[in-house]
Length: 457
Image 1 (cartoon, rainbow, N blue to C red):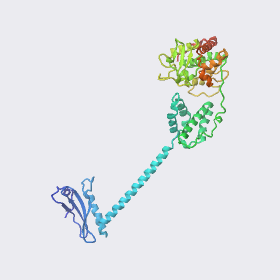
Image 2: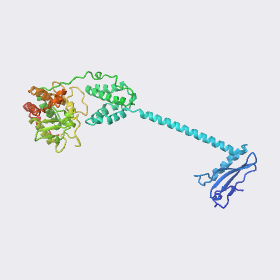
Image 3: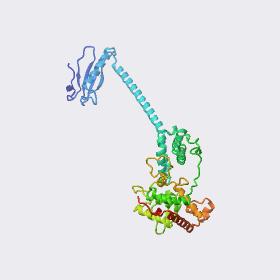
Image 4: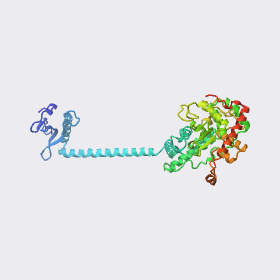
């Protein structure tokens, strides 16, 4: 008998089983194939067991390509392996094969268990790593939950953190942050000479880590043992008020300081209305009625969330009229570069600060070349100092302190007065602003007529 061929394995089934056999030496098992009437094609190994019984041991089904069964070649190799076992003395091949199969199943089960254990360990490690939120992750969480409720949606805090905090500690796991990491941030700010900024950023960092403690992201706040008073020294309440001579000096210095026309107007509007600079920069032309000479600061732009109406003096009206010419058709009094919103609330403060560098102080490449253009004899001044100066001038001119407080849009601290004193003081406030405007008109025009002649950007 010759070897079985693929051609034989492909013959048409008959009404009965068709058996194909390969020759084998005496005492060896025999490789066989079976073609059933239903078309099924199977391989067997026939041998004689220890009792003398002939056993047909199934090897597998036939598939010429080997995709869903055994090829003829692989089935024949399996038969030869069984022959070697049979000749070695294993007379009960079925039992041997069953034991082998059980061993393979046990090995597969052990391998699956090992892989599942490794997968579980890997997933647990991923979970631990995910649980180790970084400071960047914590900051994003904090901004989504807490900062979004701020007037600017947290934009200014995000700017400060991305500039001075996250580059230093953003990559650290929250639970790994220590006191030294926090002081590294504040020390860099103190080295730049921005002590108040260092205190502010420290307070914000403390808020963020207390947020993390409240949500069980960490057990201890790394800022808890740091005293705020130790960062940049003791807080000193600013009391800077510009003198009349300094206001006269500004009338000369502002036009030559290289400021944008809009920024020049902001200085004089802030001084003559006692407004907050952020309220001015966020204003829209719909809030200003040049005919009725009023500027309404809506609650969303006001620090105390209360609307405030300012009566425009002749001096202030002139500034707004010239500002209108500069801004053209924009709905914003101070539009940003692409005209989609107002400028950043720090814009004018930065421009003024850049022009008050001390002699000998290093000037950064991105700062104004007019580094000393707005220096005044009594020291550095800010837009907020203009607000304080305007209120002080009002009281000097005989305006009642209570009226000056109303012009500042301060909330009455006395609860009883706040509830029962409902007089608006609108007429008294309008008079106060008019007095202040007339005073500024006089001293600036005496010194320099250019104070209301704005240079187009």
